[in-house]
Length: 167
Image (cartoon, rainbow, N blue to C red; front, side, top):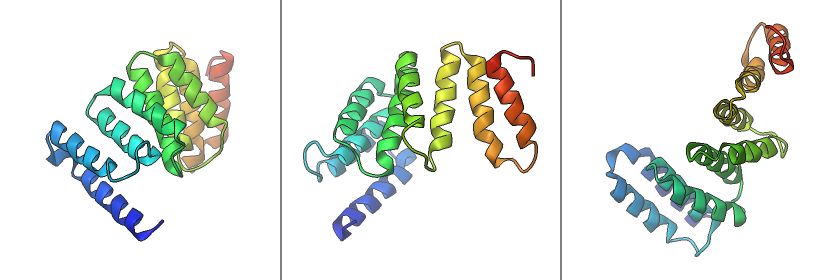
């Protein structure tokens, strides 16, 4: 990352940290000002604009911006965050099956520190789709590696949930 990019990222981070200190329109204007410093159609700028709209409950606008950001291929963790946030936004808009499709595909792409977030949002979408047992099994499976004990039994119970067995 170049020095100007690092300075831009620090300013962005500072703005997000002060989110609650701004009126919605003021916050959005500030994000738009920062985004305008990047080239038109920049994936990072589009992602940050989408995130701002999302945080302000402007989900239709957010969804369109997330899609544009993903089409422009945001670098690093922003790509995966854009998928997670788009899927969450779609779920909130009632497009649950699309959310499930995105997150299911994302689970198969690669593994990183956001794996559990992908699984958590997929679990929420599955609940909204009426697939509660599958959602619980996924959530338990994501939790297992973080437990000091009971890993074997909880893994068994999670499998039983999706097999329709009594736990």
